[in-house]
Length: 263
Image (cartoon, rainbow, N blue to C red; front, side, top):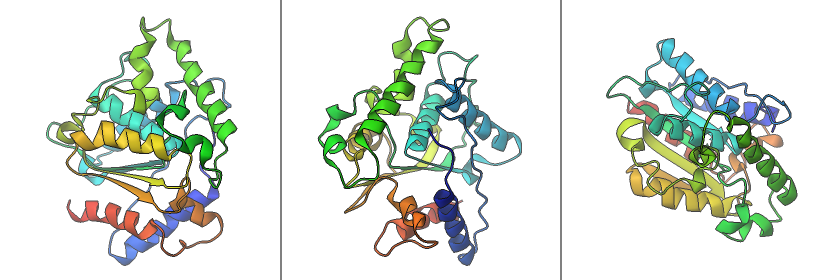
């Protein structure tokens, strides 16, 4: 629904400078995707754009083992869509062409920050969606925006007979339990998912991780931050150029750095 915000850029600049202190020169590529207010931004527009961005990096000579992909909130949903596409190529190739990693290669890591994985019926996973009033996200706004995005799936009904085939891409928590079973073997070495204990999406994130990711990936971690809100590591930078004390920022930056140390 929104493009990248200033606080997000401050977070990643802080991360980049912290990594430089450790001797890592890490470049950060930011996807400029189409937002929901664009009438041409219906599903699967953003998946196509993310696919093209990754394909561009690969075509420019980036090794998959040098790439770690991060997304927060709806961006976390988009990262899950991209993973879905890599293990189950989108059923309409004319809309989203397949990604072809070289045999035996995998992405180094994937990090989903407060991923928004249930859009059409978020209440079904537990009480947090309605009850977490300390969160920065607004119940009604999330519900309306999620439903609006999911409803755009019908725009491709003239290209696919069964629209239910594409639901696991738009709503990762609704995918079959074994949907991501090939992630570790063919797509990505490491996965990190974070959530705030006080955020509205907490229940759906934990269900997604415990049912869809953890059973099928040997190096997958879920961190739920006590007192944390939606996009907590980024929200710190709404007020400051440095993270607040006792937050997840040092942990997640170390997780990313560790991935590059093992290259």
